[in-house]
Length: 286
Length: 309
Image (cartoon, rainbow over all chains, first blue to last red; front, side):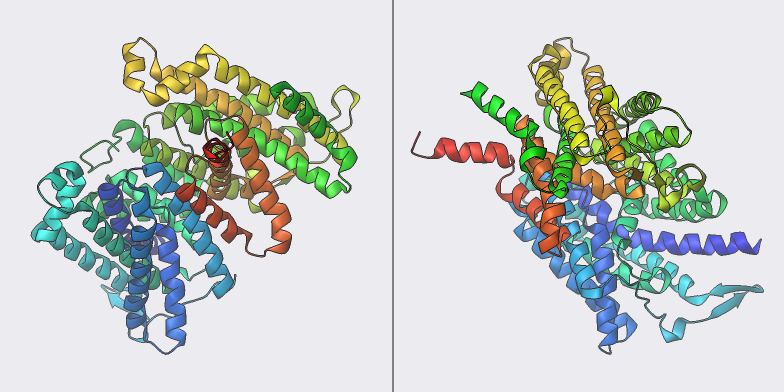
């Protein structure tokens, strides 16, 4: 009982982190039609940057916000300088993001060495809390809560603001959105920056749970990919549901079928692709 | 002129072990050749069929793992080669059926997922694949009395396979089947309207690609006498694609040039430059941004533009 409860908590926490990571991935994919293969690198870069910031005396939350901003600035530069040059050539864009992910991984290895770095849990959130006689690790609950708050915030942004309406228009039909006067290319920059910020931030708050190590990028990217394919690209609800599904599949798969954990993770995705290629909540075919 | 160049290239290739001094460089040449076979296989899909696969290292690894398993099971080399290729062909057929649910980016993402499943099995299913430690085999075969144990012998055998692969690609490109594959890349709807079975053409292209990928995987196993999950990573798939794209997609010479570039970068340059992964990524980005058609067509274009002609 307690093992499966612990697994469930871990699943929800991982789901929360994955949501932060994949929401941006999904929006970028939905709007710009690029599977941004640097997204895992953004996650790792954010986490690494925060370790340096924390070592310089910043507190955890400031470091998380600032690291996110630095990653977002980097992402925006990439979008403006490189991806923009390749507008319309989606395949070239995918390949560039892949090349960049190699470069980022190598730079991180150079700067932060190959040793895993642990990010300390913020002091206020250490330990466990007791609910109904069961112990819950506070920090993991906090991460899940942050994910839910961000989900609500992003939903508000997309569903209730003018900017959100413009983004939704761009996702649904970019040429038509251009015709009615929406500067879709500017939206690209905004969405790419926002996605990068979310990924960097997620990397930092995931740090106390996952730590940071070379290869973290390649580990998170396929998970984000699975989430987006399961949930449907460009759909916030899809990312949300998909993240928690993947969180549960990953943790329970690893506990119950350790040798086949990845098969357990990827098979549902293949099933969805075969049965419903646009994803559970997607509107258009990928 | 063209015939002369071809003959000269053949002579140069055949005599590499004789004029290249150390066995180290002979081994590098062997690596270039079997990676070129791999790149040619990827090119069938990425170049001629317009289907970019980021999961081909999975097929490559399936061939290597299948061969290693059959060999550690105590079977002869003929059974190893035949078994590994049969398994790879079957896997390629399954990959194709799943991946061809999508085209364009959908295809890319499904192949990523398939490649990751293979990686996960190689990494985690320890009773089958020995996990991160990989599988070591001992002994290379001696087909037709030529021992492959020495670097020279292995080079010549690899060269023979490589030439066979190039010849088969040349035949494929010139054949009606090759033309129909290019047709499904450029005008799938028209091809469909003309009565071609677009899905079947793509499926066959995938299987052809899978076959040569399997051959390359087999050579890789015999070369290293070892296979580990490292061979099946997403990075490995990306490298294969980089070979094709850097050299030039949908050309015969491009993937070969690209394979040479990547292998040389990896082995020779890494002795001088510590950060070869960074350089590899930078080359990747630079080629895509500045020379999107690849080195071979790109250089050819530069020559055509020059006032000398």
